[in-house]
Amino acid sequence: MTPRERLRELDLLRFVAALAVVLFHLTGFWGKGAWPDPSREMFPDLGQVTRYGYLGVDLFFVISGFVILMSAWGRGPGEFGVSRLVRLMPAYWVSVLMGAGIYAVFHMGNGIPGLVIPNLTMLQGGLDIRNVDAVYWTLWVELHFYVLAAILAGIGITYRSCLVFMAAWMFAGLYADEADHKLLQVMLLPTWNAYFIAGMAFFLIYRFGSTLLLWGYVAVAYLLALRWGVWRGENAFHDVNQIGVCAVITGIFAVMALVATGKLRRLRWRGLTVLGALTYPLYLVHSQLALPLLDAVYPGLNKWAALAVVVGTSLLTAYAVHRFVERPGAAWLRTRLRASLEPVRRADRLTTSVGHEDRGGRGSTGVNGTEPHDRTPVDATRN
Image 1 (cartoon, rainbow, N blue to C red):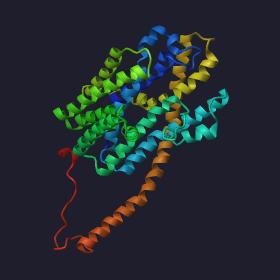
Image 2: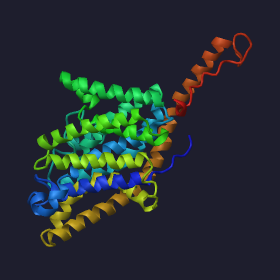
Image 3: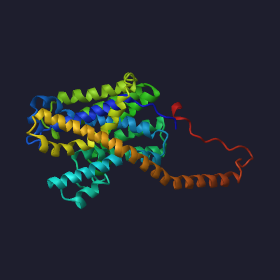
Image 4: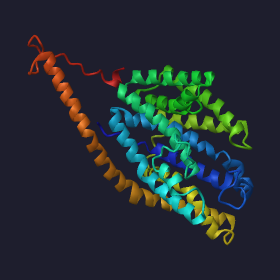
């Protein structure tokens, strides 16, 4: 597989999305949080803007559709699964254990056996068990997408199969919602799938060029995202303006369109790669650190200084997790997971070899003594 060019503009956007979520929790959240009072009441002016920070998750999901398709291209489901486990689990395990320690100190939660151990699997969403940290809910949504992407990788990822997959996922999600079918709604994520589909379409535009069909996918996904974004604003998030929600979602699609068409390629500062590396651990640890930090420094420090302490400490912790956990942990885990796939590859090679012998004898020639017909699939770039 040829090395992929790093899109540092996506690193920047990922960091912006994570920072938006951090500021939402610390300055724009309406409910009980780490502050003595709701954070939106602590920062009433700033909160008028950061109350929309939860839409950083929406940006995450569009970026995920782009990046996951790019990551899965040319890989089978096994290699794709290894890449996801290596990327997600080391920092996640640290976050769960950090949460366990904080819960123990502050006498929160229902103990290690009932809460922390199931959370270590990242499957607690399917077990109907509360997350150690509320932010983990997005990881369960992401896992739904990864399963579908692995199925696509098993079928074979080409331009054509992606178009079929995106259309099938979009319409099946609509049918599931229309029928109010619980199982299909859980599997197909009709309230979120538009973001992932849009991200996939943006990647296809980036890799193969603009076509009316691909922009049609983006347009339909955008309209669906607006519908569900307004619905979430009315039902899950309080005191957000519909026009504001639509404006942010429109901005998300606009900036991703710039990425897809190469308009942001000038963003090549290497420091953006560091910001991209901080994104995932920052997202995981910030809300857990906020409670003990604010308990220690506020009101001894004024609210702005305390906010700076929390954000700064979260960034430093995120870097430490990346440097001392993610990088060595990923290397260790990648080697062993790939070794675990080797028996599967050997079995596949043996099956293929036996099949060739059955069709054409022990040699490499066909039944008529001619070279066997080349059945290599047409390269995806020609589709």
